Length: 402
Ligand code: GCO
Ligand code: MG
Image 1 (cartoon, protein in one colour):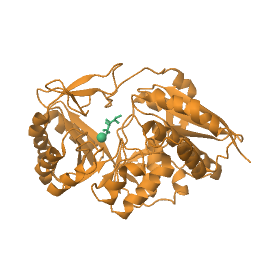
Image 2 (spheres, helix red, strand yellow):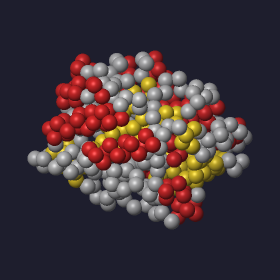
Image 3 (tube, protein in one colour):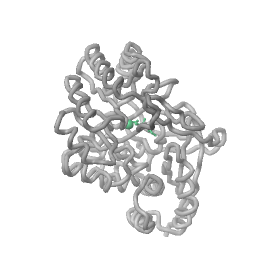
Image 4 (tube, helix red, strand yellow):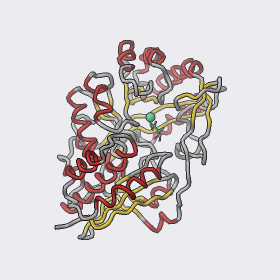
């Protein structure tokens, strides 16, 4: 019987920090899993190295579900981003191995294609409205059928989601950058630029917007109502999701669709959001919600309630996560959309991925497994550096949700 012979935790920083798990079987088959938790990377690296790798050696790599249950229930301490990201890395690597052993791309193991390609949205942004409009035009010219729009709130400075360089990367400083926030200024400004996008480009493409947890439920309800005429594909994370009841209030006031879940890590964290139909799209991901095995469980629950998928795909999810997401997205019946920002050029030097962008869609690699390779030599050129996400402060100096 083939067994797990080796499991290595690889930390590198090609363009940004990534943690990768590589499992090698006694037959020499390797599998990769993403274990990146933005701004808290080494906690997952230690969880894997110190607590999971010793449990993996000698196990049967084919027993994916059993390994998931063993690591989840066996920890006693349940859920949470560190645990679920570490389990996700193991799970993803084992699916990669299973695909390679079977000689099939992972999506074939998940039931095969349910669609021809995976609809994606990318991030248009601007320091003001004209530059946002130019950026939306650029993404439409590149063939995107769905675009997220964010612009800097005038005179405030610290708006979420505005790109500075080639690639949007919020975790850019060695200690957290402190950014100012004014809900009043945002609520006065943001509906206007979303309308400006529709006025200029019309309605023949999907328009998305990320509120990034910044509003109270009643503020979010007002925002949702204000932008109804823009017919957003979704407003994302209108309010923090710890209090799930909050979404009922938003729902009572607006038909703007709601997407939540990028920082939720298990089926139990999204259970009420889904079963009480408080959201329209669930944004949980392979890497932060327990791997392919657990994500499919979440998506199956969502399907019962006509909640569609809309997985997070920011730059802090490595190309391994993106490849795994595309295998899941192409196979599940209730797929909605996939976030796709594109990675920095350095990232592609370390992670060689067969995922392709064509006509607004992503296509999975047809190689056995996930279709991603990790280049150790290239990775050596990009050592880990501590990087933090920003923190938001209201204009009176108090801490706000970033
Ligand atoms: C998104 C997200 C990201 C997150 C980042 C945190 O919708 O893409 O909100 O921009 O802020 O992934 O690590
Ligand atoms: Mg988001």
